[in-house]
Amino acid sequence: MFDKTFLKIICICSFILGAILGLIPVIPPLMWIAVLLQLFFISPFLIIYLKRLNIIKSLEINNCMAVGAISGFVSFVGFAVIFFPLASVLNVIFKVDSFLGIKVILTNFGFFIPMVFFTALLSALLNAFSGFLTVYVYNFFGKK
Image 1 (cartoon, rainbow, N blue to C red):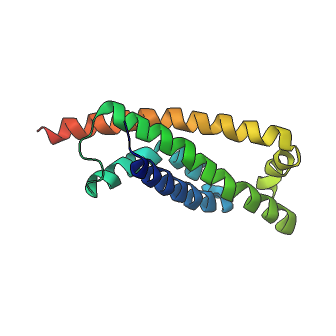
Image 2 (image 1 turned 30 degrees about the vertical axis):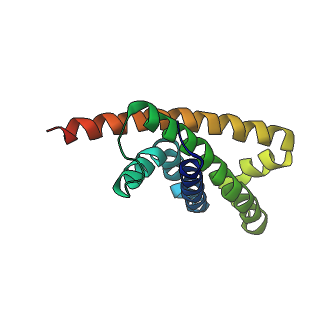
Image 3 (image 1 turned 45 degrees about the vertical axis):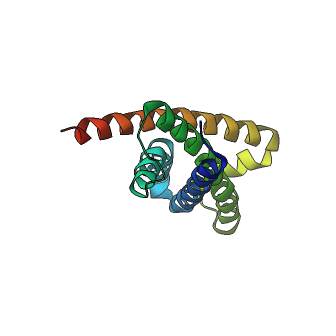
């Protein structure tokens, strides 16, 4: 279905996007905006970006849903790798109440890993659906 270089491009780009979105919630009012962007809009951005670079030759529903699922999973892992340690450090230094729950999550490491895994699966599912919608809208408006 995909070759290794294409998968590497998808994983690296989505990890970088997830890491960038992991920096945004450090400002507490922007936390939910960054989470919603990560859950729904990583795959449309990545699909359109790769289409403009001609890395994706044709937009097929199956391929773009797979790109969405891979990018959603990897981007949430990148989000978690950056956001959770940074939020716990900020909670220790500045005693920010918005990050109090994150301190509790990080102290219970047996809960942290499954939570990140299942949330990454949720992100993969939602981004696969967003990838489907991206292809549908792109093909609908491209034919007119």
